[in-house]
Each structure stands twice: as C-alpha cells, then as structure tokens.
Image (cartoon, rainbow, N blue to C red; front, side, top):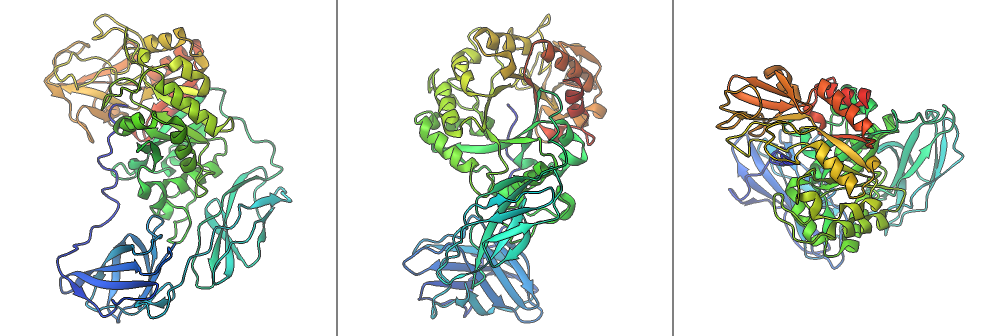
Length: 607
C-alpha cells in the first residue's frame, strides 16, 4: 500500500510545554520517603503560565499508579494539560497518570505539564493521599486486577457475573463493573447481576478494583456474553469477505472516526475491518499510536454510542470505539494489521525468531484491556525477500515461517491473514517468497491489486493504477489484477483465499495533454495530503471520469490525468471476482469514500 504515510499521526495529539524557559520552583517541592511530587513554573506571561509537576519514586519498590492533588487560589486554574488526566472541582485540582506513564521503578521519575490561567501557585499538595514531600509514605501500589468475570444465569435481559477478588495492601473498597467499556455499576462484593439487556445481543464485561485510597487498578480480562432470545444472530451479508482498512491516523487531519462507518451506512455492508497499523520493531509487534489507539477521549457527537468518554474509563481511543461498533454490529470481525509501507522494515528481525515474534503479537492483540475488540491478526509485509520502502533479504522461506508461527500461536479460533504483493510479472515479487507454502496457515490473502502505476514515474506514461486486465500499451506486462490472481492460483493458492483489492483513491499526473492512457507528463498532480494521490470523494466531482481502460476509470481535466475506480468499475470487478471464485474483496481505505459510502455499497451490492 504504497501511499501509507503517517505524517499527520500524532502531531495533533498534545500541546507542548515551553519547558526550560523559566525555572521558578515552588515550595511544594521537597524530598524523602517513598515518593515526592514537585512543581515548577516553566513559563510565565503575566495572565497565565506553564506548569510542570514531577513525580519521583524515592522508595525501594515500584509504584504502579499516581495521583497528585493540590489547591490553587481563587482566580487560578488549569486550562489544558498533557501526559496526565487533570480535573478540577472549585479550587481543588487532581491529576492522574495516563495508561502509559503510571508505573515508576525505584529512582525513576515522570513529569506532566499544563497551561494555567492566573498567577497563583499550588498549595496543599498530596501524592497518592500522602504528603508530596515524602514525610508520610504516599499510597503504595494500586489494587491488582480482579479475575476475569464468569457469566451464569444468562437470560434474554440479564446475566450474573462473578469474579475472584483483587488484592491491595490497604484493602479493596469496591469494584466497577464495565459493560462494553462503560461503567454500569459499582459494587462491594465480587458478583453482580446486570439487567435491562437486549435479547439476542452480544456484550463484553470487565471489572476494575478500587482501594481505600481511591486508587483504581488495571481492568480485568473480558468475558463475552450473548443474551438468549431475539432469534439467532443474523448471518453476514452473503458468504464473501467484504473488508475495509481503518487507519488509526485518520482521526486527525481527515477527521474520520469509527462513527463515520455508522453514519455512512458502511458498517452494515462489511464483514471485516483491518485496523492499521501496529508497528513491527525489535522483532516484536508494538503499538502504533497509543493516543489514537486507546487514549484519545471522544466527545459524544464523535462516539459510536453517543456517550462522551470520561477521564477515568479503562479504555478510550479507537479501540473503545471499535468495541462499541461491534456491540452495534455483532457480525463485524476486527483484525489488527501490523506493518504497512512504513513499518515493514521490522519484519526482517521478526523473521529471525518467528516464534518469539508470534508470542509478542499474541500478547499485544490479546491484552486484557482490548482482547474482546480483536478477532485476529493481519500481517502487511511489504515485501518478503524483496524491496519496498526498504529491501528485505530474509529469504524465500521467511514469510512462510512467520505465518506458520502466527497460526500456531493464535490457533484456529482467531483469523490470521496477510496483505500481499500483486506483482504478477515474470520474476516479480510473487515469486520472491513462498506464498504457496504459507497459504495453509492463512484464512486469506489481501492481494494489493492497485498502485501498479503512478506519478513516481514523473514523466509517465499515464496508466490506470489498478488495471483489471492487460491492454495495448500497458507500461509493464504482468502488472494487472488478472495476472496476479492467475499466478497465485498457478502456484497452488486456492481462489477462495484470494481477495481482490480496491483503492478508494486515484493516482494522477499533471502536464498531460493526451486524453487516452499513454500520455507524457511533467510530474504528479496536486493532492490534498500527498502529491499524485487524491480521494475518490474529491475526484468524482473535481475531475469526473472521461473514459475507461482495463476495467478502471480515467479522467482528463485541464492538464491533470487521473485514474480511479467508480461504482460502475467496482461492479465489473466484483463480477469478475465472483466468476474467478475469489473469496471476496477488500479496500484501502474507508475515509476515501463519500459520506454515504457509495463505493462500499458498490462492493456489497455486486459481491
């Protein structure tokens, strides 16, 4: 997927403090005991200031969470904060750690910052319920995670949940019961009966303990419950896979949230989602963007459930939104996709120890905080034993070995899939790796039958980036959907394990005078996010199609020449895919479609 860059991801997440400009240390800072908290003004502009708290573990055992409390004089307040969840009640302010910075080893420290209005300084500081200067030992460890709940007495409208108790050095006060990530009850016992449910519906439950110092511990594992009645779960729309990629960074500049799958009508017309991307680094699967994945707080109007995220809920971000989507559309399966164009260089290390890599992926995908969200893993290695952004030399057997290890670890109850090259040329990328040998371990291959041609060849010739078949004048033989699928089938990959790929975007050149394909150009056409590429939702009106070649539309407007798929060309490609016995279709990616999801509708209605 050639254009998957992450330039926008993460830059809109946090404000940055003006650290180091001014060093005004308040009396709240001191040292000793088990932990300390100190405050520093990092900047001051008269009507406001920048502030920073630093928490340091001065004890001999780890701290698993921290809460800093202080008072401001009237007229002084926090206006924004980063690296902590900060709330205020009158003149009293409370800051709790984020999910990624709560644990402090002995001697370690962590800081969070904020911008303030007014000119006051903090007083009456408390750290985990104790003095910030360490004269009293701050609250020790937060409670442990309770045991994963078990479900019993399931009816049309209720379920009884039971779990093993959490432990805490100062005692557990109560438990929060979470349904689909939202708190539904707080109880003092280790059981709860949830009522008022909908018959024939899937729910996910977790539990979180709170100690006598009001510290909350980690969330338990999740138990899935399907209430009785309501008929059986409706079958998916047909027997073909209809899969779309959802990009974690789309929530930034593109402002495309999981809720858009609902408002566009697309969620009702797909069977699977690939969440892109997790990173591959150090021979392991890793988080791609923690803020987008599980920390960003969505407002009520952005949320699938219509309820705003709160600062203290166990899971936020896209993962929680996907959880809410699955509760609304129980048939949708979600896979976590790792790699992509930018992060495929990490697979070289992964291939050195496939079993260790598979274990790391399993541990991450099945993390108790979001295990119920994901139904499997997708590997997007661009490209095994060949060149993409970087060149891989791990050998022809590496891909098979990695997929074998993933299937062994994830088992038969999880999906294991992979995105693959569509280079059907003689001696091309399909021949570089053992895709045939690996096919026994995968549920399907997402064959990337797009990006065959584009303005990386700045002078052209102009050509459709996703040709279904060959045509007179095609720049390179074998660079078509039909050639790729034929080669996969010829080496023994079953047709039902091959998905045809559709790009929800176009690729284009500028400086073109010729309407038909094969013209010369002077460079890439201007795109909203990247030169030479533009979303279908923009092109359909800014540069309407003027012709069709090899099953793909093209458009010549002014000096620009674009190629892209339309509902009509998608219909023809879906008919071809059915005739070939393929397992279905996938697309990159949701945000390129129109607000009413016309390309998703074309895939669904014709497949």
